[in-house]
Length: 406
Ligand SMILES: *Cc1c(COP(=O)(O)O)cnc(C)c1O
Image (cartoon, rainbow, N blue to C red; front, side, top):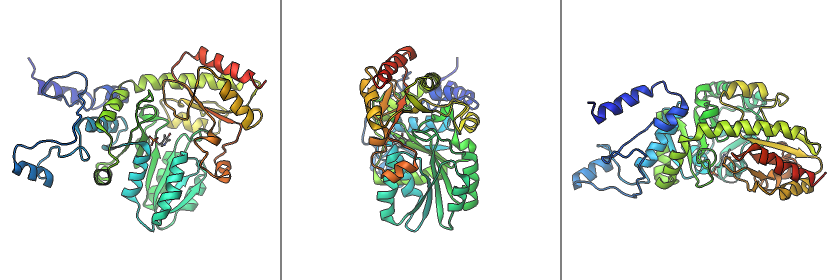
């Protein structure tokens, strides 16, 4: 007979060299006295103390334990520990959304007078956050083309504190050379931050390539079924302590309920990513053969400029998002989108449901025409986040839609 704590200890030892897909299901088990198999959901805003002196000791941080769910919550902690293990990071800090993760990172590691370098090809709201809000606090930002390493190097200033990228980019799938950027960051005494939303740790682990911090919008593939918002930052224990300070004081805390949904989402992430990747590649190759399509953007296509880097940097796969230009302009793109019947017209991605969107007037609509042009977002461009429906049905729906502009 082995007792419970011995079994738990043996489980922990067996996970020391486990793969991300196993960690996603088995790591960070914190069973309660009820011995539940599925992870418990702790819906509580505060915690009780046995005495006034215990309350004082926990508030002072002299004894470990929960105080208030803006600080810590057992369900949120399970999600953080599991994601950190999958990313090969020491720790994680969960946030209420992906944007909250980005804002909290900026608050933790930048101050007035600092400079950051950011890829031109990051998520639209990220650029809006940096340009409209960070600049209010006297943060200087230089935008550079994602794949131009010389431009990153040339942009470094004595006060550069962060390098920020997202790889592959949305929606054109340009791949940032994470190892090379990490060298530039280290030389500059700055941190490299990588938004890993499109890959998840199943496809790519930026910390193992030299990145300092990984950002997630858990809203996308980690949930995977379009139910709730969430975010996280993963990195060293020291850096995450800084972030935890920001989050527990400023309040962009992940709700316990959302943490539970995301924790359960992690269990099926490897399985889902494999199908997203396989179907995206099949659809990309099929789209290339359609007469109404001018160009397909997917880093799993040999002719994509980022193909060989993607192959090496993303051992788990090329991702589930692709984009293509139709022959014509906005009118033809909108016509194709409107002629689909199965696909959802929505800007969300990473869902079991395949989604279709027109980046120039939605996700990238807040950018100026010049910024859009710099990011390569044309009016004829359509983005698809390939879901888990049968590929034959997706092709049939798109074939009908493309025929509408023939
Ligand atoms: C959606 C998204 C975000 C923002 O995440 P939210 O959860 O919507 O706040 C950040 N980065 C990327 C790449 C995204 O796709």
